[in-house]
Every structure is written in C-alpha cells, then in structure tokens.
Amino acid sequence: MDIIISPVALSAPQWVIDLLQGGTIYALAQQLWQFVMNIVLALMGMNVSDFPADGAGAWEYITDTVYPLFLGMGAVFLNMFSMAGFCKQASNLKEGITIEALMELFIKLVAANMLMLNCLNIMQEFTLFSVKASGLLLGSGSIPSVVGDDYDVGFTLAMSSLGLIYLIMSGVCSITILIEVAGRFVNLFMLMGVAPVALSSLAGGKGFEQSAASWFKSFLTSTLQIVVIALIIQLASRINWSITAAMDAGGLSSWFNGAVGVIASLIFMPLLTSCVKQSDNFLRRAFALG
Image (tube, rainbow, N blue to C red; front, side, top):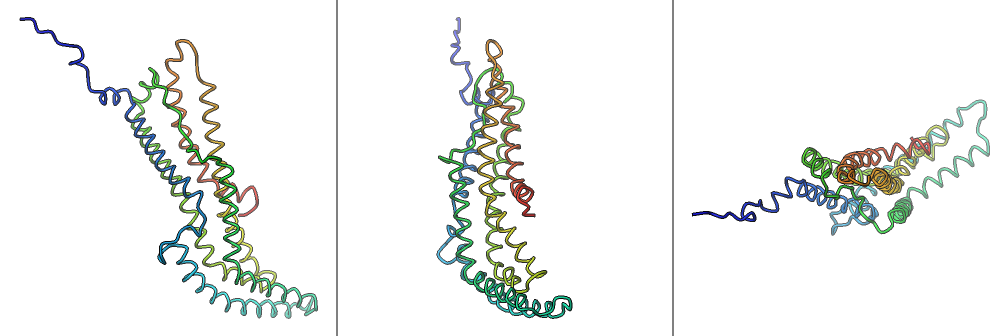
C-alpha cells in the first residue's frame, strides 16, 4: 500500500524555522535591548527629588540625614577656614592686613554661609535644568533602535553565525549604559550630601577655596552628563542609520542587505556604550572641568 506523506507533515514547527533563520534570537535581543533602554530613558527623565520612598528613599536620606550631618560639620569647618584665612593673610608680611583683604574674607565668609544654607535648593535647579535639556534633545524619547530586521539571505547567514554574539552584545551594552546612567545619580547624591563641607572652604580665601572649586566642577560634570548622554544617543543612532542606508545595495546584492544591518548593529551597540561611558571625560576635557 502506498503511503502518501504530506509535505506539511514534514515541515518543521515555525519556532524551529525562526531559530534557524535567526529571527528568534533577533527578537529576543530586541526585547532585551528595548526593555533595558526603556529604563534608561525613564531614569534620564528623572530629577534627584524623584527618588522618594515613604521616608526610605535616597532623596529623603540625603535631605533628612546626610545633608544635616554635613551641614553641622560644615559650620565647624567654616569657622576654622575663616580663622585660617585670616591668619594666612596676617602672616603675609608683604601685603599685611588691609581693608581690601578683610572685606574679601568677609564677603567670602557670607557667601559660603549663604551657599551652605541654600545650596540644596540651588542644586535641584541645576539638575532640573539638565533633565529638561536632555528631554529636548531626546524629543519623543524614542529608544535608539538597532538595525537588522531585513529578513533576507544575508540576515539568515549573519544571524546563524553571529546570533549568540548579537544577543550577548545587546544585553551587555544596554546594561552597561543603564549602570552608567544610574551611577550618575549616586555621584549626584554623594556630592549633594558633602556640599556644606566643600563650600565652607570658601571662607578661607585663596588656597583653601580650591576645595570648593573642585566640588563645583565635579557637581557640574555629573549634572550636565545626562545632557551629553542624550546628545550621544541621538547622534550615534543617526550615524548608524546613515551608514546602514548608504550600504544598502540593489539588484541581487539586495538579498544580503540584512547582513549589513546585523553587522552594523554589532558595531553600533558597543560604540554607543563606549561613548556614553566617556561622556564625563568629554565634559572635563571640553570645558576644563577636570
């Protein structure tokens, strides 16, 4: 008896076909990338005061515990730096104690005192400005997408050989960007907590005030870093799309355009991650904040 076997019965399940063609790995990598980058974009739209938790949040810990502690320490250091600055000026036999020198020390003492009492609100305004500026750069907040959804012969060949690397790369790069953005908040909270001690050095005048200048440069770097990261995300995404579009071929070569997208994505993800990690160094070099 002849047995007729239907070709449909011999066909593999769709998930097997997708796995062999790389579609499943690509979809999983895309989901992982989009999930983590959604968290990144959410963090980029948050200010430091957006971290409360019914008394147990980071913002409340800074405002209720850390800042008052260092404010008390800063008040003690303020008197010490004032006396040290006066003694330093008095021991300067060339210039001596002049009205101008005393007025300068007095003005810096008042400025340090005012900044110590009000710097928490001032710092919030700085960070709010950076959040709004990064929001303008990001626009609608679209996730930086990786190119590679052209399911052709080239895509199948590329994903069959590089699929696992593609998946690992999307996870490692997106999580690294998340750590960099989240780490910025840790730096900001630490700088806000110790601000009174650093600003109290203003009362000491020349030589002592370098501590306050260094603190301000560090705070400005961490504050504006989110703006640079937003700019990097937009520029890197557009460069990736431009390069991929320029390499699109026509005719028979168009069958392998998918491979171009996959390879471009493998370059784009580490490029974006590296640029994000270097964002603070860019600020220090470009604006002498080091």
